[in-house]
Length: 235
Image (cartoon, rainbow, N blue to C red; front, side):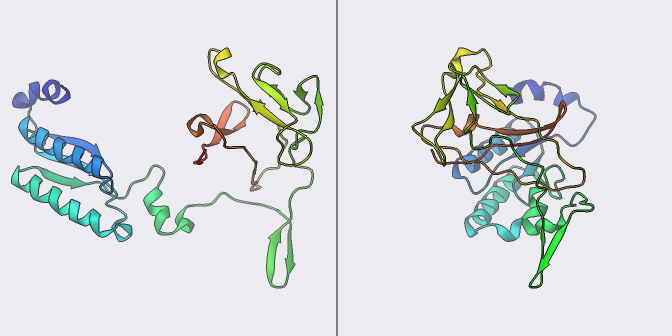
């Protein structure tokens, strides 16, 4: 249907190039089959080019099967008079660039950070006054963990779990997400940090029965979102 709607005006178009954009992973057999189908459909509906985003800017990392599929795709496209326009030099997240060398990414400036030099190595000294308060969840008052500005519905969605703990005597457990319209189970703490510093955050989560698609670490500066992280875990 997409092709039918889009091609209704091709005959009247003043342009000679009628292209579509396609993003597929040639290392995935299912996506490769979808690409082959799209090329055939494009030809059927009088398109003459495909802008292909398929990892073409990191060819040196591709396995032999990738090039076999690439050759099959090109043979089909040539036979149907479909021009393949390779998409390379991707900007965006620059994953292909960083795959070659992560140091090619511009780093954020760090100023006046203390280092200790020992045995030929300079190691950064952590800011002692920058830390998560009650990070071990040992301090609690009537179901609410001290030091956190947001804890969704203590006793209904968030719970003090004295049966499971990474260390110490207790941890925080989330469940019953359907009780709210948004399905949130959140824990938030504001931390005063210093400018021009690089900070590392680590945390422990129990992955049993965890739907990793709905787990996210978010960092904000005021209302401005700075970073989010969705870990890829095996539950």
